[in-house]
Each structure stands twice: as structure tokens, then as C-alpha cells.
Length: 288
Ligand code: PXG
Image (cartoon, rainbow, N blue to C red; front, side, top):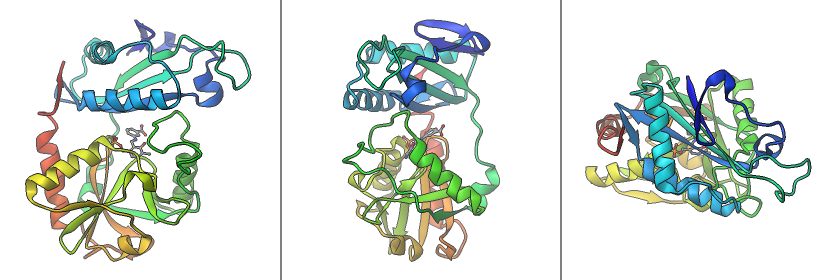
């Protein structure tokens, strides 16, 4: 496997960064997780825009422009003969000194890994996920804007651990007002009386690329979609629920906090979103 590292394609076991890289020492950096479908990098431009915004928010100057990053992503996929898979694009503050200050750090390290993706078992798309709300809250926007896809995922990792410890695959994260924010790496949608709802970004959700695709599909299907503050009660009493994310795509959720969602089986509208999403993925990207 070839890894893109600061302009070079190097073998996996030679792809190393310094222990003084502030990405490692402090989680000081940003990243994107991108899908490759049938030689097509899905929504590459949208991912690169989000990376630019994340970098701008943490005052990290990207060493490559949008086109150069796009070329580097495609080159890495081609070098690995990948037609379907997962691309992890990481930019760190770079090598510096011990101490929080980014002064003296740099240049930023750019790392691109293109690999196979470990999908959720197909069975889960048919039976649905069971999720549980956990004590760890989504980070407060005044501490760190949740829209920044930074290398600091400890908060979400703790939530994931809490869910797993009690036998669930996924955690539902609330914000400090007790509203639904998102799951640990996925956005949340519910269907209630024929209207689709998802928490607004200021509730602590990431501006998910899959979330945006689902909103577009809703429009195509003539289903109203509203960004609205949601409580756990709204999920407990919804007719349908599903999660969206680059890794998960669109996955049904059939139980929230031990309450069955709807009939307890993936809903009819959810199934429509799953198949529409899969229809669209090969059309909406950059060809390798
Ligand atoms: N919320 C959070 C906190 C995320 O990290 C999403 C929502 C969904 O966003 P997208 O743009 O993917 O629809 C994410 C995305 C991984 C991995 O390796 C994580 C994500 C995406 C891909 C892979 O764990 N997070």
C-alpha cells in the first residue's frame, strides 16, 4: 500500500511522522473521511471545502490549494489501484517543540491513506441499529465549534466506549442543553408524521456530507425536511430513524434507549433513502 506523505508516495511501512508532530502530541490538526465508489471520489469538492473551513477555524494554513489536494487524493487512489474504498486525508500542524504553542511548528504534515472500507455488516442495513444515549456530551460550541473536523475526537471516542460497554454499537450524543446532537461519527434523522427532521448544526452536529445528500434526496422525493432542535423524546416517539455518514452511508435505527422505533423494523421511507443514496453515489464525484 502506498501512502501520500508530504508530496511523496511511500510504502506503508515507511510512512512515518515525527513524534514531535503536534497532530500526535495534541491532536492539533484536521481531517476528512471520503468514499471512493467505482473509480469516483464521492463529493470530493465538498469534503475539501469542509477541510479548508476546519483548517481556517483552527488557524492552520493548508500547504496545498483545493486543486492540488484533489489531485493528491486521486493520485493516491490510482497508486493503490483502488476502485472502491475509503480515503483518509489528514493535515496536522506539523513538527514542533514540546509545549502547546504552534509557534515553530510546520510545515503542516499532509497524509493521505486510501484503503478498503470496513462496512457495517449488510445484515444491519436490513435489521437496523440499536443505539443508546450516553453521559458524555457533545463538545460545547464555545469550547470548540463542533463543525470543525479536528483530530481531537476523544469526546466522541468516550461516547462510543460508553455505548459499547453496555452492549450497543452506537451512541447517541446530546449537547449541554440535553438536545440531540448526533452519533459518534454519524448524523441523525427521524421521520415523524411524514416530515423528516434532523438537528440543526448549532445543536452540535457536524455539517455531514451524507446529511446534505439525504436532504437533497428528500427534496427529490417530495418529503419535507426540517432542521429542528430534537429531544430524546422526539426519537423515542418517531416513526422512523436513520443515521448518515461517509462510512455508514444511510443506516436504519430501530431502537433508541430501549424504545422500539416505529414497528421495530427499518421503515419504508428509510429504505427509500438507502436505495436512492446508493443510486446517486457514482454520479456525484470526481472520476479518477
Ligand atoms: N458527525 C461526526 C462527528 C463525524 O465525524 C459525521 C457526523 C458524518 O459526516 P459525513 O460528512 O461523513 O457524512 C462524521 C463523519 C471514521 C470516519 O473513520 C468518521 C467519519 C466519516 C468517515 C469515517 O471513523 N465521520
